[in-house]
Image 1: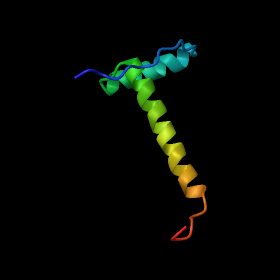
Image 2: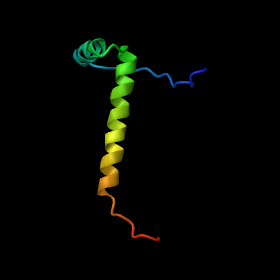
Image 3: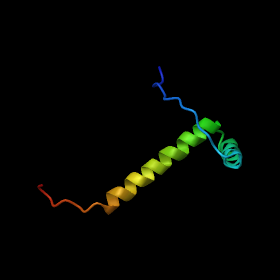
Image 4: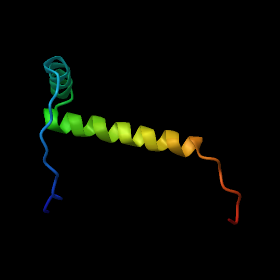
Length: 62
C-alpha cells in the first residue's frame, strides 16, 4: 500500500518545547514528527467539536 503524500515544511520551535515533545513522543513510542502531527490532529478535532457545539442547531426539515 502506498502512503499518501505528506506536506513538508520547516518548523522553528523553542528548544525547551522540542525537548518536552521529544520526551512525550518517546514515552508513546512515536517519532517527534509523529507526535507533532498527533498533537495537531487532536487540536483540530477539538476545535471542530467546539465549533459544532457553538453553532445553533438547524430546525428539522431545513
